Image (cartoon, rainbow, N blue to C red; front, top):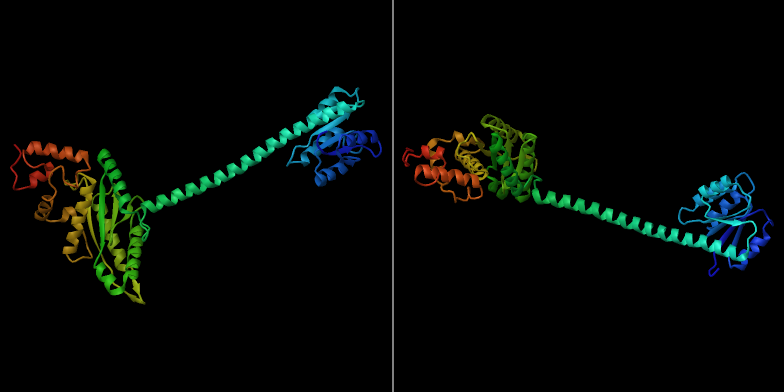
Length: 386
């Protein structure tokens, strides 16, 4: 044997002195055990490379001994070589094989046969141990990759949340607001659902910052965001629109429903306590709303936002702390505002191909500046359609 191996021989004391001498001649380091129980202790402490099962007296037979000893070495493969009598029944040999015995030696064997069988068992052990090392390293690699993948997914979720939310108020940001609004607008136009928009502005917010400081201004923004989230319905989207402005997108919501939401927001803000140094600071909101398709001028999501913002401006003109819907504005003011949105290349319409087609068709019918038919009939300065 070209290298020293630790061999456990299970045999009654002094019963196989000839076997032990042969193994020592092959350069093996020997451990001996008289029965299965003693062998179990040796396997746990000495960790032999190979077991030679010469005879197995005691309460365990050879098959049980082989099965028990192999189960103890979970870190490495433990080959078992059994010495059997030539007349051993076939059923007994089968039981030994099923128990895990790797090689058999006849009772009368020569040194060359012993060496060859031991080498075969050790080659098998080497192959199994290499496979075990590869699988262990692979398991470690897969565990590292899985941990990295979980971390990557968590980082991606965090980045996604950060990319669509406002850092101060934890509401959705303007970018996500417009993406979501465009999707809801397409759904509403496809299936004929109402879609309303609310623009909310904090009254005299600059004065709040100037008088109480920017930290208190940030506090007011966060508290206003909480009010809006509490007043919004589960299907509504609440976002920070601009500095001190917020927006709510309300799917399947007509004039009456959005008016109820706006009133709920105003009432909640009036009741809310904005505290600065133990004193209540009066903070009010102004709101503007617009609704598709009940407001006939709305032919794009950008126009829905624009008209809601114009309604908000009317609330400011009326004295603030109020809500105004686009359809509540007097006709003359609406006509003046509509004149600002002319032509298919207007920025509010340029991103909406369907709106451009609708305006182009209206232009051909009117023979003049492109404008939606509902707007053209309301314009006193345009000729009536033939």
